[in-house]
Image (tube, rainbow, N blue to C red):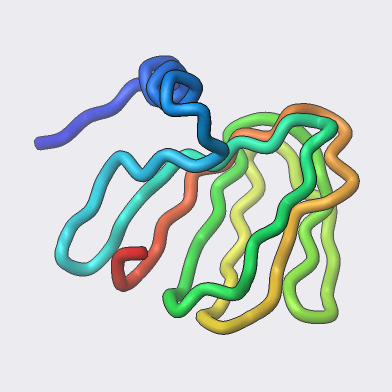
Length: 104
């Protein structure tokens, strides 16, 4: 079994000075923690993998393709491979678990 604590993942992400920390990579998926502070710009480009976002904390709007929706703690968003997407209008520091399949 592999188990993780969000506080420890956040500390590791901060120690590595990055917005994204991949903390699990298996044959069929990978999982990471993505962080965008209120003043940050999300500069993601479309990925080759399907992905699922689970918002752990914060508030923002996500646009996937031509559709936009507000997200907050507890929101889950599916983004198909190749689809342009980004978080914007971040009103509270955003922390998101990201699942890529196949691994990113």
